[in-house]
Image 1 (cartoon, rainbow, N blue to C red):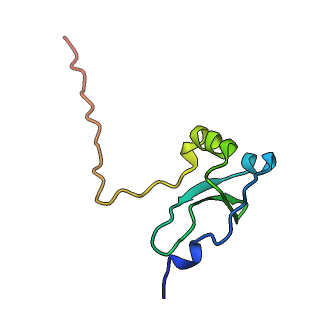
Image 2 (cartoon, one colour):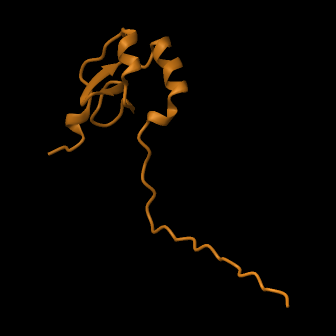
Length: 93
């Protein structure tokens, strides 16, 4: 019935071992609105997900350094191809 309901974290951890942060492939931020009632950070490690409290100082610092690991939204619309214009050199006689 609700496609987003199964992606919500129901329990969050208040502690993170150092080894987990080193192996994170990507992360998402879950906001407490709509179907999800908890605010959390979802860490994806080797196909598994861990739900962690966003209030942990170590996690906040790590997230600032690793902004590139957040999934980016795809731009809608068609991309235009750029064609490279090559000018031919004229030979002088």
